[in-house]
Amino acid sequence: MSKAAPQLRLDRLLANLGYGSRREVQGLVHAGLVVLDGETLEDADQRVAVTADLSDRMTVRGRRLDPPPGMVLMLNKPLGVTCSHKEAGPLIYGLLPERWRRRDPAISTVGRLDKDTSGLILMTDDGGLLHRIISPKSHVPKRYLATLARPLAGTEAAIFASGTLMLEGEDKPLQPAELEVIGPTSAFVTVHEGRYHQVRRMFAAVGNHVEALHRERIGSLALPEDLEPGQYRILGAAEIAAILAPR
Image (cartoon, rainbow, N blue to C red; front, side, top):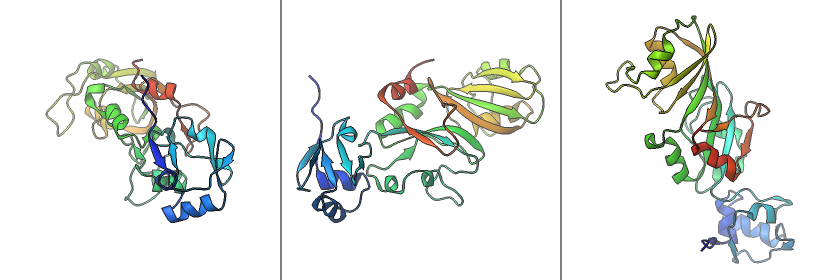
C-alpha cells in the first residue's frame, strides 16, 4: 500500500519554502497569487497534500512552485567559492535563489569541496539522504580530475590501490583508491571515503602537489558538460538513485 502524502496548511507550506512569513504568505493568497490545478486558492488555512508533482500543479505569482522538501540539486561549484554559511568571500549558498536560503528544512551541501576545488557538489534538504551519501558505510565513489605540479612516477596507482597508504598526521590507512593516468601530469582519482583534503594529501604522500582539482562524478552521477560553473540543476528520481548506485 502506498504511503499517503503529508498534508500541510497552505501558509505553512509556502512559508517553509521561503516565500515569506505566514503573514506575507497569507497576503499572497488573499491577492489571488496562488493557484492549484488551475484554481485560485483563497484560504491560507486550507490543507494541501504535499505530493511529488505539486510543483507541476501549483504556481505562486505565476511561476511554478519551488520543489517541496526532498529536493536534491547538483551544482557545478566554481573555484573560489566556499561551502559554508559563515566564512569570508563568496559562499556557495549565494549561488542559489535568495528564497531558498529561508527554506525549512534548510538546504545543505552533501559534504564539501574546498575553495580551490571545482566541480560537482550535491545540495539537499533531505537529511536522511545526505547522511546515506556521506556515510563511510555507503562507500559512494567520488571521482576527481587532478592536475599535478610534477610528472607522475608510475608507481602511484599501485600505492593508491594498496589500502596501506597513510596520510600525514593520521594513524589509519586509506581505503583502496583508483588512479587512471590521463597524461604526464594529470589523472583521474576515485576515492571511496571523504577525509579532509584527501586527494591533495594522497599526492603529497607520494611526493607530488595538486595544482588543480575538479570533481566530475559522485556514484554513477556525472557532472553534465553543459552545466557551467555556478549553475545548478534539480535532480529527478533516477538521477538521485544514480548517486547511490554502484558503477
